[in-house]
Each structure stands twice: as C-alpha cells, then as structure tokens.
Image 1 (cartoon, one colour):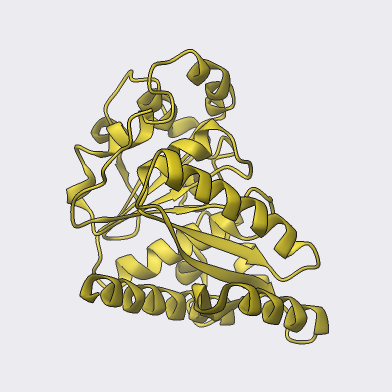
Image 2 (tube, one colour; image 1 turned 90 degrees about the vertical axis):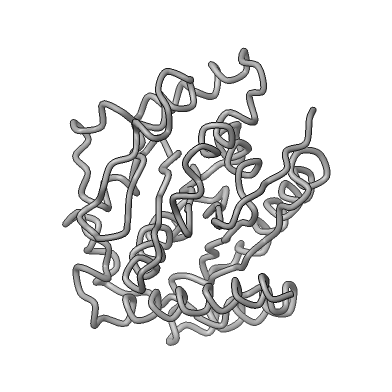
Length: 267
C-alpha cells in the first residue's frame, strides 16, 4: 500500500492504548486543555465509539449530528464536523456510537487505513496540536489514527500487566511504521493512576523506565478523586478543580510535552 508522507508544522498525536481504563481519554482532554491554556491551538478528534472525550468536554450525545463517523465515511469534510468547546483555543470533532459499525464498513472501502489522514490534511495547519483519542483496541479505527499521526502518546496504568499490553502496542506501532507511516514514533509513555502508597506502583514505574528509558515522561499522573469526578460534570479536571494534584500533574505533562517538541524540532 502507498506510504503516506506527513508534512506541515502542526503536530498530530494519537493517544492510544489497546487496554481500557488506563486514563487515555482523561489524558487526551486534560493535556489538550493545558496546551490550549498556554495559547496553543488544539483540536481533539474523538474516534472512540464510546465518545467519552466528547462527553468529557460537555458535548451532549444528542448534539453530535455532524461527527467523525460521517467524516470517515466521506459524507462530510473534517471542517464541517469541527465544533468549538467551551475552552478557548480548543476545538473538537465529536464521536458517536455509529462508529461501532465503521469497522465493518471500512473493510469494503478503498484506502481504508487512510480515511482519517486524508480528512485531516485540509485543516491540519489550522492547529498547533491535533490529538486523536483512540478506542481501547487495535482495530481499523486505531490503524487510521496511527497512519494519520507523527507520534503516539501512550497512557499506562501503574498495574501488574502494564508491560504486557505495552509490548503489543509497540509491535503494532513498528508494523505500521514499516508499512504505512515511516515517520511514526512513540512521543512518550505517561504513567497514570499512580498511587504513592502502593509499592506496586513504584515497581511498575521502575520497570517501565528500565524498559523504555527516556521515552517515559518524568511526570506521573496520580490517582486522584477530582480527576475521576470531572467527566460527570462535562469538564476537564483543569477546569473542574485546577488546584488538585491531578490538574497540576497534567499542567506539568503539557510543559514536558512542549519541551520535548522543541528538542525534536531543534534536532
């Protein structure tokens, strides 16, 4: 299949892990909010059929008539599906449960793994960062994201089986890099739901750092009740309670991401 060459100054990043419950969507919306707060223009594309990123930004399920499913199916442009969030500098392309059926529909389509990247191309220069919130599985929707992005952010819960799932994702990224997207890389692994009272959290964190070295962010996201509460209010935790430990961690993560990006561009 034809390899895609990604061009342009905007950074397009997937937030992905095939395991659910690792803080993937929480990381997407709060990292995006922190980037927007320092003046970056940010777009979240929600390609998870559960639509949690859309809900977490306060977009009602009944107010998603134009959404990413219609974009991937080619019925509308990405530009038509973009809606502003309540957060300045942060836009969203919402998701819908219709995406559940997209897997079967994509199989019959031409360039089925390139539908998303072709839809992003006309609007990508409008944003400093485009973050794609992926479903918790390695399916055709996730493959579309991996073809469309320059790098992947991997949220990893500090639990016993964390490394087992991570190795599978790394192998998938390598396969995509070798066949469909030669520039694909891991931007960073972020440790989530860290509990300093739990020795297992420390052990997992050390194991991941031993395995991936400086690919692992210095910032860790603590287990925090305010982070858990925020989505039910349709707000990122940075808006819900910007003083809590979870919010402060995501602000630090955004700063670390920006520093990494500057080093990348300087190289």
